[in-house]
Every structure is written in structure tokens, then in C-alpha cells.
Image (cartoon, rainbow, N blue to C red; front, side):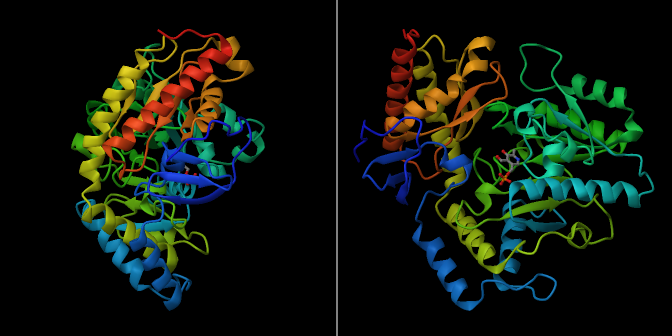
Length: 429
Ligand SMILES: Cc1ncc(COP(=O)(O)O)c(C=O)c1O
């Protein structure tokens, strides 16, 4: 395991192979996958059981359309998802991605209100900042200006968006009073849903929604007939040390969008978990319609093997324990640089805030420079945030990472931060 210092900054290496937490390029350099790609490869690369399950399924049947056949892996996957999420959802609607999962949730929300005879409920309250995906509907309810830039025409037809930012300038997530004020401003009879990321990742770099805010949101939604949607595309299926990140609050959202960690990068798959209150008496899958490849047998077999692997190896608990160690190490590291803030996050997803002036951020975000330096030091981390206030590095390695590998991750990150500081004359303590 040697990091080759000569890796080029600003150009992407060409991947050759990957195993566990390690990725190797065609030039023989190794990279510690410190962000699981983009919080996707939760069980690490090259897991034999998953590859075998996919090969076996491929030999049986890769594709049949869900309107023509049920498949064995899909049926078993549905049972497994119900089991790990405590049998609290009515239905699972499959998609190919996280964006499709949040957009499916949005479609179900609109169907729900239309069928209840309240078609004027078309406004979705969403956090600022937030990111829910790149399809038009998902981006249409995202508080991510850079990703929405130039796309106004495409987003105009999506559900109406009301962004909810915290009134407190030091807070990163809105609290109960921010949400109720927004609901009152828009008019409760016009609000279709409140969409929340339990841990804001791409947009807010590890900002955690407190448990009390979830409870307040549940109460607010129940009182006003609004649906509560949790976007758990980044956090779902173990990443934060729980199968779902928001349920530790004692609250269950009406709809939960998932993706990424569900199939851990082995084959594209997302899922929208549908609660009892949504479209009562009607099949959500039929209402959502969906895309050709949704829930195809091959992806279902991959995800089933991933969930079984997570369970068999106790990786959800491991995420919690390793997350504590990661936070400790990142805290120590942040203390060495006056332009790096203390980590925020939960389990194995942490954001490390980077301080930079607005003017300098506009020229080039520091997070991009640190990520390039990290690559040169043999480490993959992920730049997050929508402005100089929220900019951060996301550190979110596979849940299989060992303590030694965590130490190595932090060593390489330290080298990357030092390299960045030296390149720009920034100070380190
Ligand atoms: C919270 C959240 N929702 C949705 C998405 C979109 O998922 P995908 O890229 O799989 O479409 C992302 C992607 O980063 C995300 O972070």
C-alpha cells in the first residue's frame, strides 16, 4: 500500500481495479476511498458474495419488466428492506437512482393530494441548502444554486419550491420555528410536503438535523395534513450507524427516498419507501409508474446481497463505532489548521468545514484544491457545500474500514491539507 506522490493534480487518474477500501489506477498508484465514491460503496469494493450473487442472477435472468413478471431477488429484497427497517412501511417502489427516488416521492405526494381532493397543495418546503438529485423534479425541489444554474426553463414545471433557511445566521439547518414560519407564509393549505435530509451531505457538508426537529416536523405535518419526506439517499442503509438516519428520533417519515448504499455501487438501484398514510388503498408502484429498468432482477440481486452482507458483518454497528473514532481523529486534525473547522456529521459521514473568504471562494473553492491535493496523496474525499459558509470536505469511507485504515486516511488527509496550505501560503498551527 504505497501512495505515489507523483499523481497528477487536476487530471483524473484512470481506474484499474478496486478492493475493499482501496482503488488502484493504471499507473500503479493506490487511493484510499475516503468517501466511498460519493457515499455509495458502503461495503467496500470487490465483495465476493455480491459479485457471485450478480453472476448467478445474470446467468438466470438479467431483465424482465416488473409489469410482466415478479422476480425472486426483487421479492426477497423487498422482504429484506421491510425487515431491516422494522416492517414500518407499506410498500417499496424501486428506481434506478437517488434522483428518481426523490422524484418518485414527489410524484406520490402530488398524486396523494390530488386524490384526497386537495390539488392546490403543490408547494414543497425544502431546506436551504439542500440537494435531492439531478432529474427535473428532484432538482426542482433542491436548494442548490450551482446545480440549478441555467436550468430555470427545465425546472419551471416542477412542483413549487419554498426554500427554508435557518433564521439564525450561525445555524446550518432550519429549526421548528423556521419550518412553521415558512408553512404559515406559504399557507398550510398549499403545502404538499416537507422534504428533509437527515444529514445534509453534498449541499451542507455533514449538517445534522436534530432529533427534536424531526419530532417537531412530524407534529407540524400531522397537524396540517402535510406529508413528511426524508431524503436518505446518502444516509440510508447503515451509513450513520442506523438502518435509517431519521428514525432514531422516534419519528417515521411518510416517504423515504433511498439509493446509493442500497446497492453500494454494484448495480444502479434506488427505492422509495412508502408509509401507510400515503395514497391509502392504492398501489404506490402503480401510481408512480417509473422507468423501464426500475427494480430489474440483476440490481435487485446485487442489493439483496449487499443488505445481507451488512447484516452478517454487523456493519451498521461498525459505522457507529468507527464514526466515533473518525470524529475524534478529524477533530485532532482540524485543531492543526486554523482554516479547518471542527467536524460535523453522524456515524461514518463527516464534513470538515473549510474557512475561506467569499471572494476567494468565488475564484476557486478551497474544497476543490484540497480534493486535488488529496488525490495526489492517494486519498479520495468529496467536496461539499454551496457557498463559502457551507464549503467542506466529506469524509465517508466504506463501513468496512479498519481502525488502521482510518488512521491512514487521516494521515493522508493531513498531508493533503499541508500541501494545500503550502501551495497557497495559508497557515497551519
Ligand atoms: C441527498 C441526496 N439525494 C439525492 C441524490 C441523487 O442521487 P443520485 O445521484 O443517485 O441520482 C443525492 C446525490 O448525491 C443526494 O446526496
